[in-house]
Each structure stands twice: as structure tokens, then as C-alpha cells.
Image 1 (cartoon, rainbow, N blue to C red):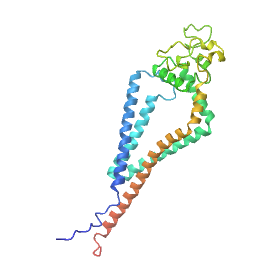
Image 2 (image 1 turned 90 degrees about the vertical axis):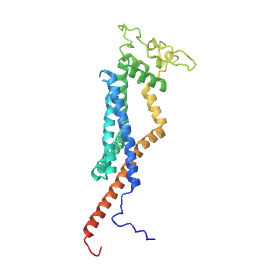
Image 3 (image 1 turned 180 degrees about the vertical axis):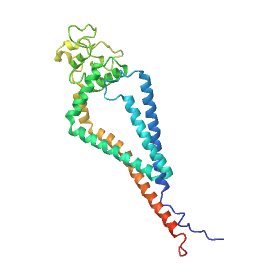
Length: 280
């Protein structure tokens, strides 16, 4: 019975299959997610049929979803192919892109904290623009109604901000039947009510704040949003950490694999140089 031969030096590899295929699976998951994001963005964009619906926002959510999806697709494609083919160039591209994205997110968080007043002003502008276009888009209308019911608020700074909308405007020459009203989502709705009275906000802007407070939420949504953020810092920190961990894991795995591939290349070069050596 012959003895088993020990593996030769040429059979040895520094590249760990665990690291290699773990990085591949990691990228494949996010590659599939990116295709779903692009598909949803394209569907949402086509379903709108026009650009007027979200033209007042800084960025159309559908376009933003497509841009993020395409970027994620390209980055994870580099990671998938780079890990399978053990291509240092693609892996370096993947690692650098993840590092840049992570640093940009970190910088955005720091700048948002440092310049919180400017960030608040930007949010105020977005909310005011949304109020102006409340009746122009059903999706926006549902989003605002959901926010006002969820945070028990009305308008941006005060419920009288709804006077910026042409239908709810409180000027005497406004012919709208909703003049001086607010959306039903501002009302103090009881959970026991089976049918929602959508006219419950009628004429509320004509009342004094103390009187209106008995029927609607008079507090603005901006203050409620700020208070929610202050009260859920641990939750937001957990979300931020949840976004950062996959990026850091991807950077770590790619760098480990890159170093292993470099070591393997050095080993192959060493073997080639000493293959003709009779003492090797």
C-alpha cells in the first residue's frame, strides 16, 4: 500500500475559498437588491406619465431610486466578478467605491448635525412646497396625510401654513369650498370612528388657536419631527450602524482577498523563478 504524496508547493494557495465566496454571496445579494430598486424606480417613473407631479421636490424619488440602484448595481458587479475571477483591479474599484460612499455618508451626518439650522430650513422649504402642491398628486397627498396622522401635527410650523395652498387659502376672494380649511388628517380622529369625516377640518383657520385646538392638531410637523428625532436617537443610530456595517464588511473582505491574491501572485512568481533550479 503506497504512501499518500504530500501536496506540492504549486498546489498551495493563499486565496481562501471562504473569503472568496463569502464576498461573492455578499455582493450577489446586494446586486439583486439593486435590480429590484431600478425596476421599482422605472415602474414608478412610467406610472406617473408626467414630471409635474414631483417637480417641486429637490429630487424625484423614482429618479433617486434608479440612480442609487444603478450605482449599487455597478459597484456590486465589480465585487461579484472581482471575487470570482480574483481580479485585483475590480476588487480595488469595489473597495474604493464603498470607502468613498461610507465617508460621504459620515460627512453628511456630521454636516447635518453641525448645520442643523440650515437642514431645518431646507426641510421647512420642502414641507411648504408639499403643502402648495397637496392636491396636485395623489401619492403626495397620501404621504402628507400619513405624516400628519402619524405625528399628530398639522402644517409645517403651524396649521395656518395650509393657507399657502390655493384650495385652503383663507383670503376673502378665494372661491374654493375648502377656503380656510385644513386636511382631514389634521383632525383629532377617534380610533373608534368607523367612518372618517373628511370635512372635519372645514373652517378651522377662521378659529382662534385655542378654539381650533379642540378639533384639530394645531402643532406644526417640523417641531414634532425634531422632537421625534431627539427621542429616537438610538433607533436612528442603529439604522445608521445597520447601513455602515455591510459597507465595512465589504471593504474588509475585499481587502483581505486582495492581499491573499497578491501573496498568491508572489508565490507563483517565486515558483516560476525556481522551477529550473536543480536544487529546488
